[in-house]
Image (cartoon, rainbow, N blue to C red; front, side, top):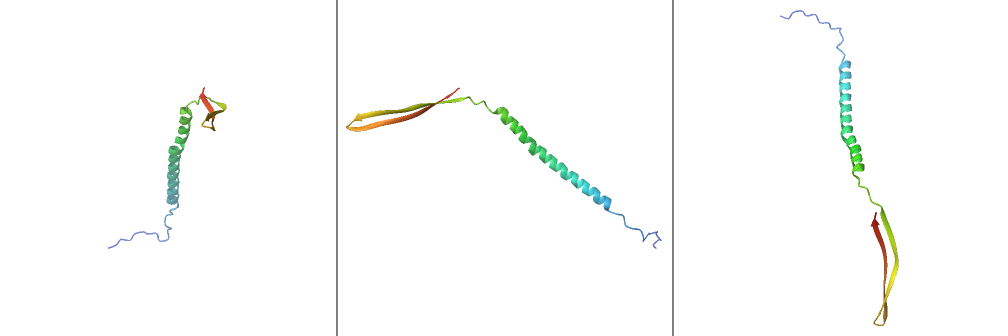
Length: 94
């Protein structure tokens, strides 16, 4: 038969506040860790890419432009006046 067990029926059940706090802290730590890893993987690459872009940028030589005045050449063949007008610009790299 059943033995008489000492059960305290007036005792309050154990509080789960500690367990809830522990779960919340662990959850927040996991979220913080995932955000930190994401920032390191995405954010760190942009700085390195910018530094590499600056380092790899070739030096552009100085460019000089020279505008040549308009030249007009007239042809007098076949009774009608015909002409050619040319405007040029010269470009040179130093």
